[in-house]
Image (cartoon, rainbow, N blue to C red; front, side):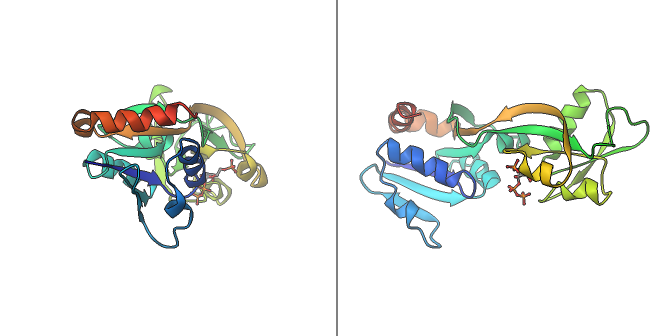
Length: 207
Ligand code: PRP
């Protein structure tokens, strides 16, 4: 039957290919991909797609991909209905709240604005803190928003912390740790049980 796997392109891509290599899957097409987006591992009977993180979940959710490899940040931000099977232990980051040093939004009285690429994660975090905030959705370079006065603070992912530091922002709180995960479509998990288990067991052995 074969299995279809949605891989997240960008930051996680190299880490994921390294793991596939270690597990002895055929990744030569993935490494020398040019602008191609679909790749075959003839031997393993696997099709790989390279997609953006959120789309990886969409493909798995709709059963077009049986398996997805995607960051926990994207999983937390989505309303997905897939099984999360395995933590790959790569792409490790933290979800953080940050602001300019003189702007402690936890002590601020009045209207608080939070800039973020992750409105759902931010909303849930501040709801737990019983803080009523306004979310301003930003698509990238989130660190810029408080500097320009668009918001009082941000919710974002931090890996090395360099972007925050170089832009004069400080971490006020860590929300949770994140890393790359394997997710599986629920129907595929039943219908392609053997192939999916074999794939995951090979990965488990090398992480
Ligand atoms: C992410 C994140 C931070 C940065 C953190 O952005 O949103 O901006 O990486 O990394 P660091 O702690 O190692 O400095 P990304 O590079 O994905 O780009 P974007 O801001 O355009 O989304």
